[in-house]
Image 1: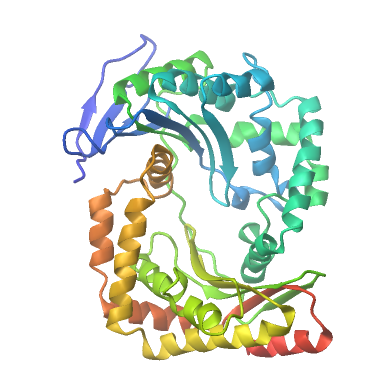
Image 2 (image 1 turned 135 degrees about the vertical axis):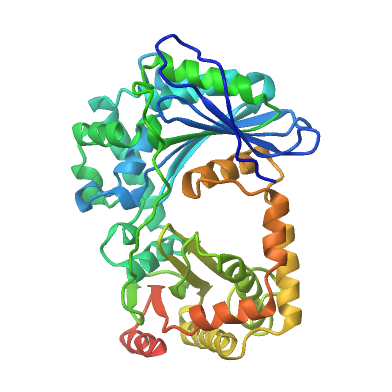
Length: 459
């Protein structure tokens, strides 16, 4: 259960005008699964989950910045900056950053999304102080030198090229553009060749200074750890870097606002000489704060979340028209997407599309039977728990929850929310989401007559 009481901790420096505030957000049994949060003077939040039965720990820092925070000319800056923070600080070279974790068998990486960025390291519990020191140093002391910007530009252009060579990945970027158009959510996280080539060290430094203030950061740590020790080590690292300048600063609130998607029924086709045609058919979904997201999760699981799902059975098992077919949801602060992906022979595109469209229309009009909903609930409950079996997954859960929702939910509470979904809830969200006119994105070798028929497929 969640406890909202605050407990003041002692001042750690005579200059501090405010004290750290510590909460127990989730009380675990015998300390297992206990989630605590401390907010430092300066607005830095530190969230931990204790799992004393493991011998590892994962430490991460989440930044409240993603590609949707970029202007058109800055497209790709968030991801570019993610790379540059590994290139060296005043205390460590790029080699020293990577070799420090390699020397203890640790793993270190980062990822950039549309609404956040995360840097993390997974180590033995005894090596956690090293991971904290290295990751905090990267986040607070990056030099962003001109020579590093130029060297890394080549690596990022190669990453863009690698993505372009994978149409099964590229089609999801195309679908985001189909749905959102030329606004931040519709642009690729990596940026484009033109925008990456145009970014300068000075512009990236300004972006870094603006978005990596402690009030924009959440520290998350999970594993065989002690919350108070993590807080002391993180605070020492940030104070050493001079990052906690304003003791009265408050953490930035989770994203809000309202953004409408583009008109339904849009079609974007990319003619490319590939062995398969890659298809995404979809429509607007739900924001990640929408209470109906639990019902949508069940619906998504039943439609395309596993081998027993409707789409898998109809497209692959019964007809052998595709090897990979699935549905998915993406929830953002103020909107969302629901999509169906399939990869198939170009000659089978229309057959696959018709089956997918017919299944979506059928479920929108008539709903799912109770037995399919019950099976989907069971599958979703199991996958939720199994997906939280390592410290990296736990760190991701508590870090993202704090940054995106500003609150934590225990696994038991999550399972209860899934179990509480009723067949009527699922049928209602199916009518709302699947009843909308879909949009379509396709990458593959498309002839003129095929392109015309694809436009008709979403009419």
